[in-house]
Image (tube, rainbow, N blue to C red; front, side, top):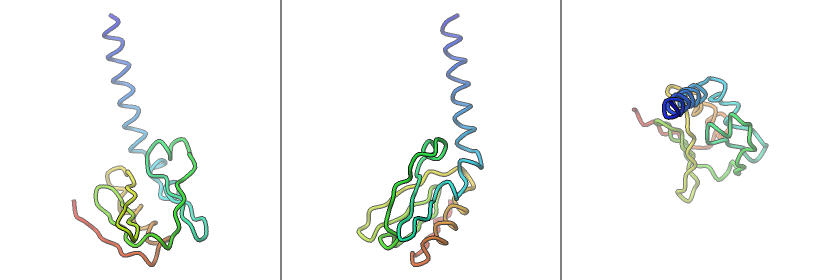
Length: 112
C-alpha cells in the first residue's frame, strides 16, 4: 500500500510541475526579462519565474546575439551564452521581448 501511495504522490507531483512549467503566467516575457536601464535582468528557469527569484543582471551592451530555437539563448560577445528555458510555443514571444530590450543584438531563428 505504501508503494502505491508513493507512486501516486510522485505522479501527481510530476503532473503539477508540468502544468506550472507550461503555464502562460510563468512563461510571460515580462516575468523572464526585467529592464534595468543599462542592464537587463533575466530569469532563466521556470522555478526562478514561479518563485519570483531575483533575476541575473547582465549589461545590455554585452549581449550580441539572440537565438530562438526550442529555448532562447542570449550570447555574449565572447561566445558564452545564457539559455532561457521556455514552454513549447513561447520561444517566439520571449525572443521578441529580448529583441525589444536588446535592439542592437543580432537575431537568429533556428526552425524546430
